[in-house]
Image 1 (tube, rainbow over the protein chains, first blue to last red):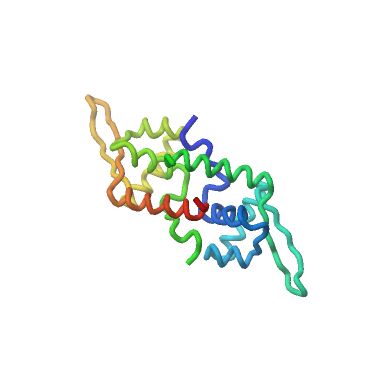
Image 2: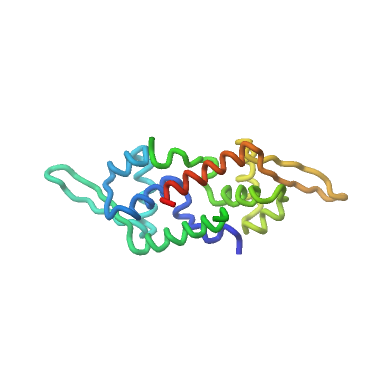
Length: 96
Length: 96
């Protein structure tokens, strides 16, 4: 069992850490908010959000606000549990 | 300035986090030791060590112990400083 085995590959990128960190403390965040908070491109955000969605760690809802399409994200229960484990593994690795 | 801007891309992979974490608390570690502690393949370890070496965050020394070649790694002063900053950025992001 290696030192890094509990570090979840699905979270092993700063953009994914950023998305999850935001969704751990906010019930929802829309695409634009995530993009601004993380200061990343549309393409980068979309691809990392997609990866988290495929792992079932976040949920995506597309809706209309008036006539404007809006995409909002939330962390799933599974995502929250797994992210906590990931953070614990990181803390253990760096000796905190 | 995004939430993740201080997260150093050079450390943004669990194998690199693992290498640095080990070299923060051990003056040296050889290839075999790192490989065993991290439970990774030769190729994976070599490629991530190379990336850290190119960033001048770790130093590689090749020597002979008797007739056996031995490759050992150590963190540079720059690597230690930058890794500490990276950890601080991670902690800030995850709200610790």
